Image 1 (spheres, rainbow, N blue to C red):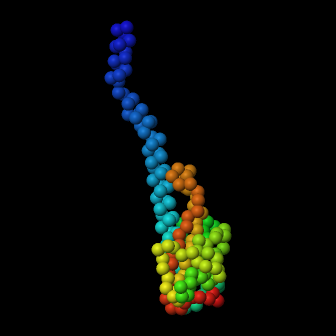
Image 2 (image 1 turned 180 degrees about the vertical axis):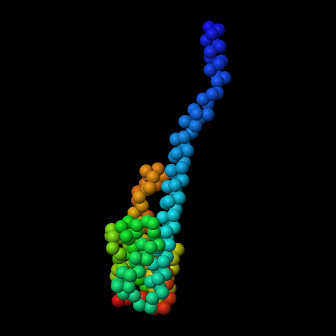
Image 3 (image 1 turned 90 degrees about the vertical axis):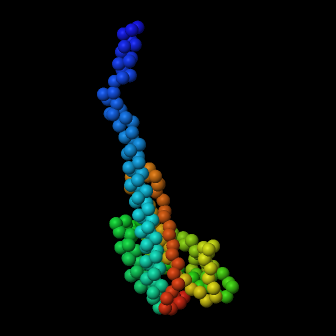
Length: 185
């Protein structure tokens, strides 16, 4: 019995492999924290780039006095450049709309341009129909705005630990600077 107590005390006092055991217990948590940090950083970066795409496209369109489908076909590739190194051509989609309010009526979508890619439904409505504007956005009589909506199919880089695959969405609203852009030429 004395031998058993002696062996037990010796075992309790031993610390030669303690660091290795602690490291082995902490390693899964450290790996999870590292992957989670990388995933969150990439998600935030893609969100910022998507926001920049919607702002850039809206700004370019709003600077025109008139706009045509051919011109919009030339503007959309700028979205791919802003999204680099992420592939907007295959994973992204854009909808550009012109919306006008007349009198006290509900704003109406004058026209819509949809980029190539996986088709998405506009959150603002369809061309020729009433526009569903954000609740905190007001328009006055004869106001026209350009709305760019961008969608991006997000795929997690590291196993989806923090975020799963899904669609990201951003929009921006700009007032035309020169013309009213009511007609798509």
